[in-house]
Length: 528
Image (cartoon, rainbow, N blue to C red; front, side):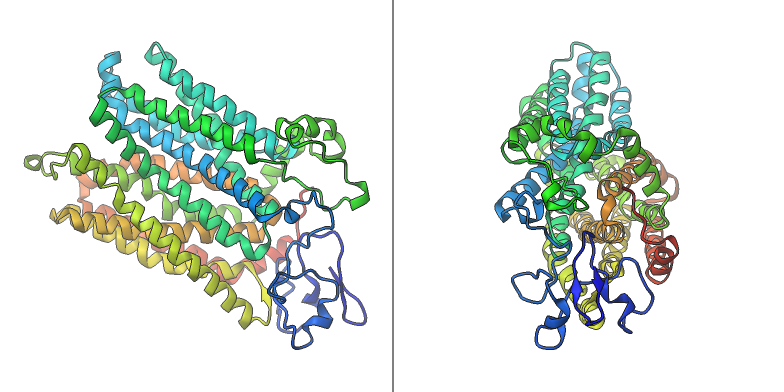
């Protein structure tokens, strides 16, 4: 965007609106990511907006500005966008669901293959980082081949690999197929932020990310819940894996019904855009191959993008902050379930069977409360920031929910630690677990929206990096949680975790004040 001598805003092929930075005093520094998101139609805003396209409310600026091309994903009907969002959310859900459902099979599989539970669980531990590695390896294909075919074919491959896990004749075959399945399952979570960035306007993204986040964050709890119900009833580990295979096939069907190619080059004029072909051609990757040289990136360039995004000044600090805040999701689940199932005479709660499975409703209640409350609070805090800054938005508006999340995550961790240490009632344990998850979803949405608002052209890379760090932290947390609590006491171990969450928030406080300077110093980096 540029501002001419008359003060009228004119549009060019840029992804963000940065027109008033040189002509208004209230913007402060020339932040490369500051954008005009709201104008006053009663004042001078209407004349200032010129030909800018606005939302139906008449004052919210559409960012990015949609083209006049009906093939532009921003111009797609709402039902199509939301169908793709829901499908992407279900695919993301399947990733952790399949991983955590397998945790309930170790005793049954060990009995069949004459292996100890520890030996079987090695696969589950290695599967976590494999999900992160798969995301990093496959992510560049979103740019070199396209969103739709990468998601479709990776999902097809993961579906057949999950079928192989069901039919595996030996432990060694199951081991190999399980790790390969985890590798390809990562595509659903890794691609979702890119799809949201491609299809939705700036003022819609936080809500859409909240829906997506709540679904994949529910999967680590629903996986073992359903796994335990099936195992307690049927006493055969194959049925749980048949469910996982069915979910993968459902993903294939949903992608086949709703997915379309969301990659759209806004730097290419409308008259120079290639013919889009049929949806089937775009889904299978035929259209992308035909226009690869002129419309898509090379594989080498796409991997260079990943390295470039990793080196951006805010990505790793925010990722490390998220790791410290969210890693305990896995550790809490493992610690609570082990202690709940431990006999009372050994210091546990003596739960087993269906009562143990029902306990997973506690974190799910927390996620639902966090999503409903966060849906309102994130909108409220963002609009308040925009009003305070006379219509100007900066990515720091997304940090306020992270501050609020700290009260829930730290309070939940401390309550869980005290409940386990003092052997309080199951209600106390469940309450702490639920409270932690209220804060966890607020933190996750705040982190994701902050980074993709800061680097809107790197949504896929950001999702891959955050996912890898989350899984590394989750692996370390689940591996050490029981040993740590047994050594120093659960009150001390969970209290330390609460302290680390506070430290993660302190990182965001620093970025709140110095983030604009770091962005200004690095400039408006373009990766294409």
